[in-house]
Image (cartoon, rainbow, N blue to C red; front, side, top):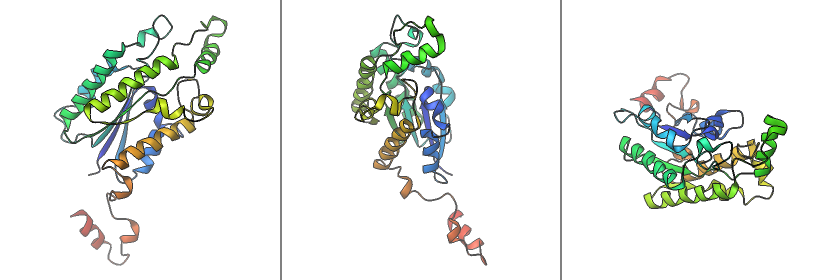
Length: 242
């Protein structure tokens, strides 16, 4: 059976199977080689994600995932005293919640490949524009996410990955290396444009390939059509499937 890759995260993961999304692109990259499953929950932080673990990753599963991305932090980093404060998780709790998620996955499967992904950067002007589009003159004028604050959460995510010997993607830093990243990669100051999704897809494929999950080196689940003899098709399936 094909191995499973689970994408676990917030709305940036939930939206990843939309047209141009990084999850859809990943499913295409691993077509006929691995099943990519999206488990994204819009608005969720790491505190709420803990309640999902036993449901999504039961410890008695006979087929745990071969790999998983853990992509939280954009909501944990919501600024206190502003419209998104209900989602806020203190920085040290965020780190420990990520640790709990990782330990649960490792209990499901000691060999699982886990990749931590930091939240992307925040375009504060973009968030203000988005708020005005929703609330008009009632918008507070203060962004509910701040890039500097999100950067602190990104740093903690990378710190935990290093402590636990995990692979990671510093999306917060990587995206800001490109001039004009604010509009190029972010649609509303927080969520991803098609170009932003392409960055995530590229980084995930790179990390998977550097580990042991390179799509190019994985076999197809069933024979490629070029291997099938039109006069004796059974031979290809006997060799591959028995």
